[in-house]
Length: 352
Image (tube, rainbow, N blue to C red; front, side, top):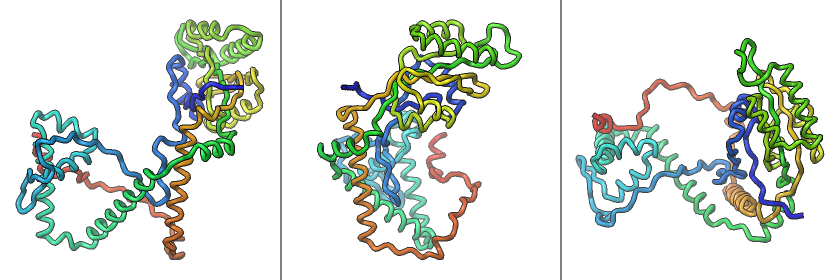
């Protein structure tokens, strides 16, 4: 039996009832898929991921080694400034671009750093133990990131590896076509005509809808009735979700009820707290095919090979740890009241 392409699981109203309320108010909106595994594989233990930064457009009219800025005895080339621009957070960039001064605001920022760095050398801060330690760790972290990125770029997943992984993890790609039915509870003291129903009325209404669906009534007709009366919502078209992740997102009581369903069956009325009542229909179970799963499987295969490569490097390094030190609990970071030191004084002056 051939199945269509599997829609990846959706965080809708499962897990957090506050999310359930927000989702039900927008029942007609398209759901946002969950990436599985993450679009960018998480780094192996001990490696901090590299944060993507904006890359400035190159201007071939300026040679990269041309000195474009001087401050005291320090200077910077066009390549230095281009790299600096690439490190500026994207949310900060509009405030610099909006000044109508080209790249001069960036130059002011960099010049401030050069001036501060030159004064730091005069103050012998480069010999401060804390500074030396930070620089040593920055080098360590940078080298680790560079090697991790290199290894990541070398990872491949052959068709045979993809097929074997898929066959060994069939349950991960099982699907459930789910239909949600929800009746909102109207808060006590609500004005006449307010959305939802009183709790007892809502529970009875949902019981009636369950019977109508099981008797073969068109779900689209019921969905329209609920929308017109503002009593709740029903998925006229079921959603195809990854079974393992869907079941992992819903409350325990719901999970137990849904897990026992056979194709076409509907759970009993389930309480959703002050939000109302919900029932879930399992329209059918399915199996995502290899073709639709290939991109995801290939990514997972590459990620696992990358983790194995990093673990191999750790084993080769011959790691030793002092038991007395590593038995100590991880300290809780102390709150700091110091203002952020992200911008040089020159940058603050440039805003005026």
